[in-house]
Amino acid sequence: MRRKLYSAILVVLLAGGLVAGLLQPALSQAAFDLTVYPAKLELQVAAGTGLDFGIHIRNTGGESQTMRIYFNDYSIKPNNDFVFEPPGHYSYSCAKWLQAENASIVVPVGKTVATGFRVNVPPKAEPGGHYGVIFFEQQPPPGNANVKAMPRIGSLILVTVPGQIVREGEIKDVSITSTWFWPARRLPVLPRRKVTARIVFYNSGNVHLTVRGSLTYKASFGWGAGKVEFQEITVLPKTTRYLETDIPDPPLIGSYKINAKVEYGPSLDVFDTTKVSTGSFSEYPLSLLLILVAVLALIAIPVTVHYGRKKSPEELGKPDEEKEEKAKAEGVKEESPGEESEAEEKGEVKPDDSAGEPAGPAGQSSEATSTDKNSQHKFLRSLAGEAGLDGGGAKEEEEGQEKSAEDEGAAGETTDSKDKDEAESDEKSAGKGALKPSKRWFRGRRK
Image (tube, rainbow, N blue to C red; front, side, top):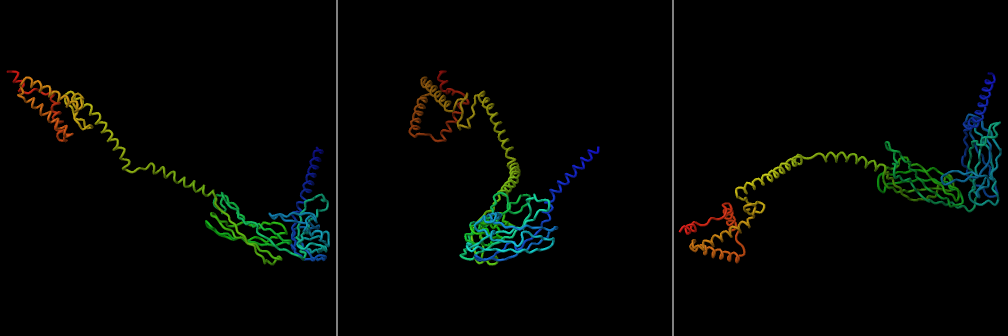
């Protein structure tokens, strides 16, 4: 039982020691709160001479800090990231020219400590800018010498060696982030895309330039205008830097023109040279267009369905009227066969309305009926003429018919009234059947 108890106590002690060892650097880093000024120091020192200067460190943390002092070269990437290298890494280095009064200093809580430095410029130093950084790094607590990652703070040193100095720079590019899907302005529900303004500046001289810039934009199509200011930055010789900032209230929709301006000069406080450039950008969030189309579709579909079902009273009455007319037409068609059959039984034929001519008996056409009538007339009259009972009337009638036929052939056609009379006479003769022989013919037979 005791063995288990001792084992548990040992495990707790080991765990506590491990946690304390891990937390010690973290606690020291949490207590690290120092301020160095000046953070950037410009010096002008002639070749073959030296210059003394001082740097102040203030401790606003909760613990006293012991700081180690050392020097490095540095460069700055276009995206403003710093790169630190050992002294003498770059051709424009001045880290090897720097000397410190003390290798380390102690900064009590709430106190400010000043420490001295000196820069010695070689006699053959090249005219122009030379650069380095002085670091103040927290020393690890006693018993934690293996801790490598410790907080540090630095001060940039910019030394200008007089001689042939070239201060020259140019704006390489001007841009503002264009938006093609999500809107740049904050709207309900929809995500907002950050809009960033950027000026790309290149230092083509042999000395550093401290630059500041501004940018204005106005609409060439659309709505909105604005202006943004950029923070001051230092551009080392033969390097490119981005002046960047976010646009707090960007436009919503449109195409815009950009006017950019960059100023620099011989010192931190003097800006006597100005460079300008232009650009353009667009803000056309397609998400808003898609939402608009969807809303219009949701409105248009119900409206189309509603008006498609709704009809006027006249349109509603038309189907009933069409049905009645269709029923009447079918009734007429059903009655017409019965009437024709009754007319056939009686021996009477109704005129065909569709042809405009009277129909003959037994479904014969009017032309066939009139031909039969003429042949019957001719036959009866020839019999009467042979018997001598018509008193020469048949012969005269035949001659009259031949004459009339010749007259009709010469004229080419008969009048509409004569055709109508002949059609009526044919109708009457068709209704009564075949023509009866004249009474004169029967009287002749009796004798």
